[in-house]
Image (tube, rainbow, N blue to C red; front, side, top):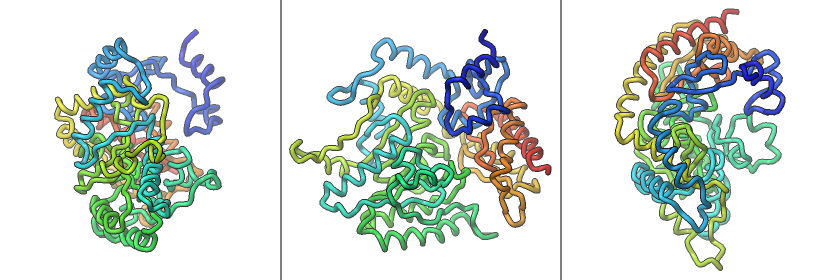
Length: 450
């Protein structure tokens, strides 16, 4: 027997799922998936679901993309894996060359890891270690934004600020400096995104002025704080931050794990501010959503601080068993090739404009406080009181009601709290966007009717 209910039963006997209260599955059935094609996932029972969130923000060019599939099939017959210590291979070299070519100018070195959280760990450790190698060991603290999220390993949790994930583990975490977010949802009526982002930067500037001597780096998610509910801000904040980091001699870490590779309308979100971070962390869309891989790009200046005779013990001794895996690098190369041959960013601009236009129809709903978009990310904020922007109590789980409704309609929408959002694969069509907006609209109506 291999039907949907049997597979779900077997799963619940042995699998512990991520970011899940497993007791929920006593009333919310697990959905076994047997295949994917384009933006669609197909369940074992034959039902289809439009993947509106790119399977946790990873998938760029659709499930079972034939070009990425073919590249992986060819690589599988050549080399599946080899350690990257003392050895190298064509896919990792070629991928590094291509990343350096498209990244903000000056990011010339690629250090690989397995996933987004691991990339953050690498950047944090590398920044700290740089200052130690440079004779400034007092520079060991990190600055983060309110409502920021950078992953769930201990270092990544420490430099994040979403209490849902962080609060319970605080006794295990290093102390960081937190400044208010430039999140433009908090702006005054009539205040522009740029004006609010400039105003909020004053808090960052004061913190850097006061603590520069002990600060190693500032870490930010450029333009969109995804796990905080797709909260967004103006690129001017990044420009001001780069200038301040230079002024105070502090590193800037750009966590582009979720927003890189075209999600915000440009290949990398930092481009919209015309800046180059000292460390840029990439993962998720790096392999087109196929395999785990992450990379930290950094500068020659950082690299040179570790380059010395072995006896000096200045080397960066950080490693992962699957660092630079050839199959994952091949998937990444195939994904980048699609950017090179197709007008991906241009097509995305048209899709994003359509998604934003249709979603803004929901702004008139009495329980929608805001509809906001940045590139291929669109968010709809449900609230209890629209005039006061008072949120629903989290215990009511209004977003879960939208999720369950969407599944019934054939869409995978997984709200963040009370925020319904779309972050679909780039192969979605305008008609499929219309379907998502209509599904979200009826789900929001159902979720807020009492």
